[in-house]
Length: 401
Image: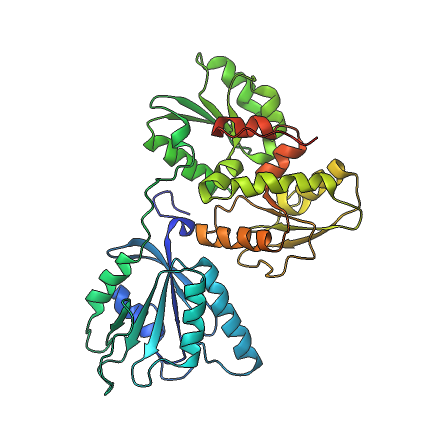
């Protein structure tokens, strides 16, 4: 990830849905002015969801999600359609592409109903206006006829897409609202086998950028250098932010009067759902022998020998509970629809997952009465420092222990 590029998780996700040969790929190419998607008369050219990060005026940085046809056939086609529907969980704006020569079909109405059920802003794009003899009926305020061949209404379509972006009156921050201009913030970043070579991971990059915009100064140190750094500063930091893996050591070396929290906790607040995760973490105290815990990563990466999700967390949980637990692991876009087999879910910080997907996963767990928390909240709780870690955020948490 380049330091000057917008991460996918912070981009507006635009999902393209429709039947085979409705013109989904042609619409993508027309919107972007590039031949990004393969256009073919052969049905089913797009066989799996494809995500493309790009700039799309007037929106700016977006992710275009190109999905398989909703009328795919056979057992494999059914799986492909299921994948298309799954993409709704990360879609901020849905574009339903309808073939203007045949009109809206049951397949179109089926996904449109799902889009409305999930309250996703949408546009119905009736394509192939140059080939259609049908009357240009507009049955929805967000319906538009276009032609990718003649360019009819493509400009108007871009403007209509821009109007679908939800406006959030309350600007969200990672840490900028916790500090004042010229405040000093110490970021603790372990450099171990799992640390990427030559770069900082995304939450660290984004936090530094957020603090810069607040006019605060950031000092980045390893956990082994924290104690000596605090002695040499000559001023008390306004905040210390640590990677969850170093929580215990950092808490020990950070005087009680200095506010302390973690990247993972800050991102839970930033994405929304920190209250759900702090409520869910107490379930870790009541796990029983034979219970199964799901540990889920929002990104896919090469697992190291001392991986936090598959090694460190299970080891901590076993020590914390003293129970014989079972663990299952998911990563990337994989996240079970049915969570009822799990006694608890522990999710990563979610830096690579867009907010809508995070909210979908939280809502799914809540609906099924399955406790869910995240890495940072869980690790702080198990080490007895969650109350201290939430204090800088103005959250008064009382441990159940």
